[in-house]
Image (cartoon, rainbow, N blue to C red; front, side, top):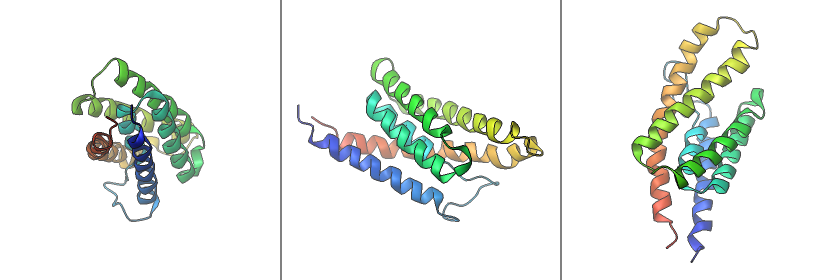
Length: 169
């Protein structure tokens, strides 16, 4: 079996991750909608994990998590560990038990994105004892969750196209 496109595909995914990190971390490049900006690297890691086997999916999840943790210096290690484990599990689930479809990917992404961002809010805002967590969640985190899920829909089609065009035959 010829594996020449695997390296090219992994390079393309890595380049996409770096580009999304630059876009996400550049101030005022992505407009805020109702106080929140999307976390583009979470849906990027998830959508790559739908198409790749467990180990490469885990490494892409780890790389996205490291970049997220470095970009948001207050929660070092949170996204790295969770995205690594989640992407490994998604690669395994979608390789052995489920079919990758738009509805499956969107449903999984919506649930995972919501849980990741809500748990992050609980650990680093509520448990930290900051003021008025309910209002802060409504004003910043709800729009961040919705915005990230919508970006995940776009990234699903981008990564599906990359995967299919660079598939080994």
